[in-house]
Picture 1 (tube, rainbow, N blue to C red):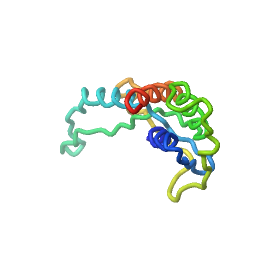
Picture 2 (picture 1 turned 90 degrees about the horizontal axis):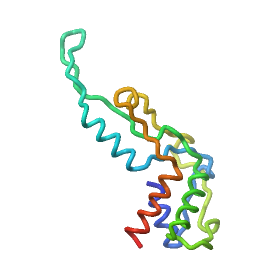
Picture 3 (picture 1 turned 135 degrees about the vertical axis):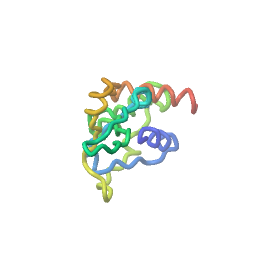
Picture 4 (picture 1 turned 90 degrees about the vertical axis):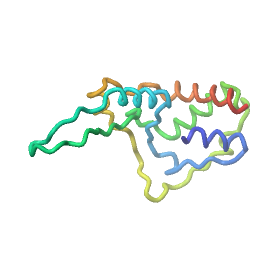
Amino acid sequence: MAYFGFTNKLLKGETIKIFNYGNCKRDFTYVDDIVEGVVRVMQGAPEKKNGEDGLPIPPYAVYNIGNNHPENLLDFVEILQEELIRAKVLPEDYDFEAHKELVPMQPGDVPVTYADTEALERDYGFKPSTTLREGLRKFAEWYKEFYM
C-alpha cells in the first residue's frame, strides 16, 4: 500500500519517508494478481486426507500470493513519480526531491522481502506477473479517475 500512501502525501505536499536510505527491496504485487490468486485457491479446496496414524489431516493449505520479484525501493519511487505525472495526477514540474526523505531502517524491518510462490505455482499453475511499471500505471490511472 506504499503507493497509495505516497501518492496521498505527495498530493498534500507532504514528505514521503524512504527507509534504509532507499536500500530496500520489496515485492510489489498488483491487486488484480492477488484477486486472481485468491479466486484460483477458492476454487480448489484441499482434499480431505488421513495421516499415517489414521487421523484426519486438517484440509487447508497456505499460499503466498505475491510477485516473487523484489524491486529496489528507489526504483519504485521513481516509477511511481513517472506514472503519476503521465496520468496527470501530479504536474510535470512536481519537485519530488523536495518531498523525499531518506531515513534509516525502521526497527524490526528487513532489507529484502518477497513472496515465495512455489506452492501456488505447483498447485494452481499461477504466478502473479504484473510488472511494477504496469501495476503503477494502472494504479495512477485508477487514482486519477476515483480521487480527482
